[in-house]
Image (cartoon, rainbow, N blue to C red):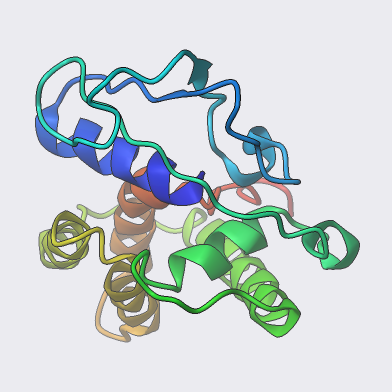
Length: 188
């Protein structure tokens, strides 16, 4: 679901038009509800004959089945940590996420959200186009989310980038990554 949602977000950004994702009623949903990992509920429809093709035609579909991860509900305080852990893996990788990956991701989200909330109290600055372009290029190149996240890591750690520019750039990238990094703004 996460890969499909990321693909939808990138396609919308690059194509500048809405993209609809459907799933067969026979396709099981993972143990996490889609809203828990910032995935809008997919429309349920029978897949058309071209269900495995991806193209710019309105009838193109993608069918993805991410197997069940029952243990996630037992270890997770923030379901978006699972999304981040999945995004840290390239969608073509044979690896799977394990509990330590999710715990690490949960810590990262907490740190990032605290920084974003802090940056929101500073003067606004323009978005940093270089970081945005690099992350968007990675996502446009075979949906390379690990590289896009590495760009985000570098942006956050960049001592020369002003907090206001970091805030605007992170907000922009989070529209694609859907990690709800702005969640803690104004909660202090």
